Image (cartoon, rainbow, N blue to C red; front, side):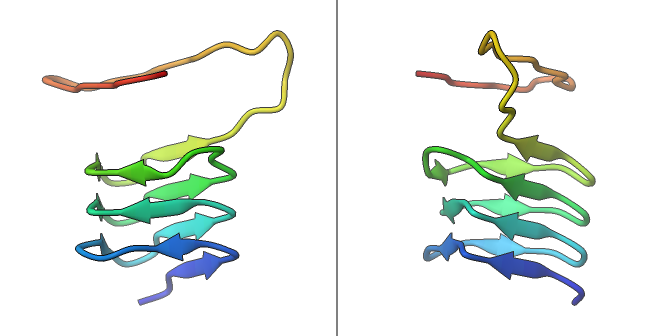
Amino acid sequence: RDCVVEEAFVGPFTSIHDGSVIRHSEVEHSILLEGARGEGLQHRMESSLLGRDVHILRSRTRPASYRFLVGDMGRIEVR
């Protein structure tokens, strides 16, 4: 309910909860809880769990860097 999926690929085994947004991104084998957002991601997000109101956004600022705010028992893999 009240989800937005724009110019996005949503693959199999993906659950998108109320109020979530996937825009200009690809996601599969993942769960997005209420209010989660994935926008402008350069690579496909897969096998992921986004908690309530978690936002993963592509930043266009320079210099390029990663910035994380991760809760207990979180795991992030980057390439």
